[in-house]
Image 1 (cartoon, rainbow, N blue to C red):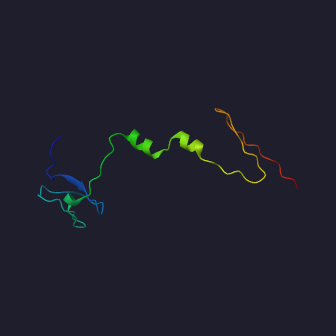
Image 2 (spheres, rainbow, N blue to C red):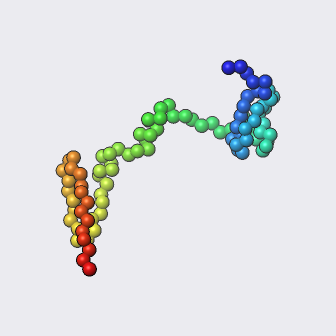
Length: 93
C-alpha cells in the first residue's frame, strides 16, 4: 500500500469528522480543532470469546435463582433434563 499524498487519515474522536493531516506534524481536526494526539486510548480484548464469557453468567447461577411461587400454586420440582410444560387453565364465566 502506498502512502497517500494527503498524509494519514483520521476520524475525530470528538466530532466524528473524517480528515487527512496533510503531512503536518500535529493532526488537528479542521471542524472542532481537537488535537488527535489527545484521543483516549481503548484497550482491545485479546479474544472476543473471553469478553463474551465474562458478560454471560454461568448456567449454574441461572438455575440457582429462586422464582417466587404465587399463593395457591404448587412449587414445580423438575428432575435433571426435564422440561416444564405450561398448562393453560380455562377461565370460568
